[in-house]
Length: 305
Image (cartoon, rainbow, N blue to C red; front, side, top):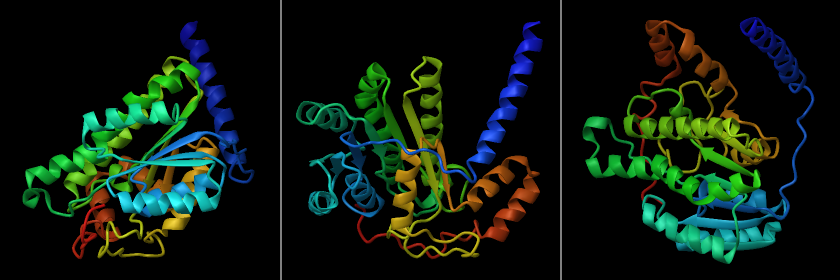
């Protein structure tokens, strides 16, 4: 009897959830207010981190900026104030260093208070094929792109759990869903970030803390300089993303408690196909989309920020 009832429940709820998802294709989801909340953004000294800071500032939030680039953070802080942030504080923090993350996190909690929205945005890329990448760069990639998320969650999640309120945002990558030639260490780090965020999200639901939301962001290449030189084979299908548009979409996803945000929209289809197509057909599709040659002309930033 339990099997019958559980199965019936799954069928009925699945039917309803699909109707709900269809309705929201045409009716926008209600946006929550984040006015007065404390938003911490790592890698806020430039690029998407800076643009997200400006977007959140316009919503009347308190901003906490982390980066290893002090001058960049000063510029971001000034822009955020001009956009309407209630208060802006910035801290030098090397997110690859666990002890430094914990130290600066304690300082934030003393000086600003508990963090309501945590945006793990800091990231680096080596741009080298696996066999050519120095061990030190591989380790750094994993420390910044993956392990830093562990330490920031450890630092700020307990307060969110206690209040059953908060939002965890992981800026991952489409390279965290599909392997890419020439990005072995980067893909590994982003796959790790996606898996970590998904698992913690499930842990929170399992203990009844459904007030702590999770948003996992998986964009294609963004025109911020990080992947300078990379070219897309079919720009209409897989365009290099515009930073301002990406930042707006991320903040919108947070405001509507969207769990997964893939950009461009074609990534939803490509990601799904990867998991259902025969391997040979998947490789054929990857070749067609240019996944084997995306990094051939990679230059990247002259200096990692």
